[in-house]
Image (cartoon, rainbow, N blue to C red; front, side, top):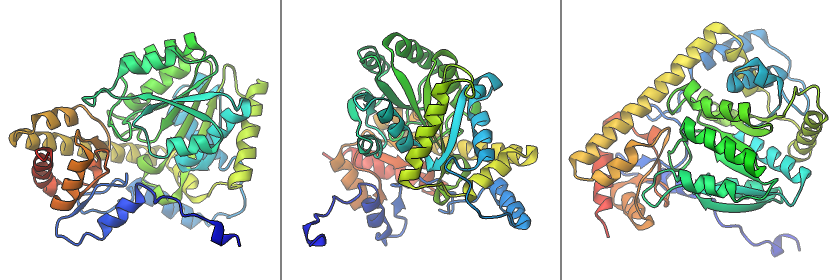
Length: 400
């Protein structure tokens, strides 16, 4: 019997905690587990730019036919232009729509495996919880190194050492900004040093870009990627539209392959596109249409694009205020070490310098639900709850 031979897999490390948080009936309990942007009322907001685009699409009553393995061409072009900025960079890129950023990661992992199944992927840890399963699912070997120092700061020296000691042909996977789970971001100088290290070692950069616009602003968050594309002949980019456009359930993203010359002129670009499309065909056939249509509508209209940029800036400003208020609350309670760690982080996530046992205390005794490794979702904190959160973190940090 087939089913009798199955053994259950371990529960998902994030969604099992989400279920625990949902079952917490205590007044004021905070679910800071899953990475979803929420407003002060605890809702996942629909951006006004997206709402207007939705109304336009509904009024047009467009067809719902198949769009092909590469998805929505208008979306692909608009996203490539948004991310890469200049016409010269865009001319080197080939892009296919994917099932969110997760699908982009998997398709690009399949592309790496198709080029050479013995290539290794270098990954700084802690990392996004799904990175290793996605890479290994494509048959790739993952080699890890520390992404942060023991005090939680970005380990720039260790990052560069990992690249410099790599084998020619290895791939280096890093997050473009607002690192999940550590909240770190690379400086432009570090991006420049990383480009030099990749060139010297013969390493291909693989950038996971999910939180652009939520760190230091859209252009600042994309500056490192653009510098890398300017200096390195080949770059892989996995992109999510979930956070920047609030399209979590629409599963919208894209995979971008940047080559050395114009994408239409080289055999490499054509081969890359064929691999991405063939992988999509075997995994899910075609990506969903609605989210991509919405993004294309927003980015191709000057008024909607400006409105979206303003809303994205507003979300970033709110995160900055929440972090600043939390840091002040921690310092006022004497948790200066925790405050110092949080103060330099960026984006939606905070990596608290707390042990798993202290995160357990935070959840059980204070109703603050985060990840055992210390990650909490800052975007899930109402402004009215910052003081209570600071008090809870301080109390947990004093627990043995």
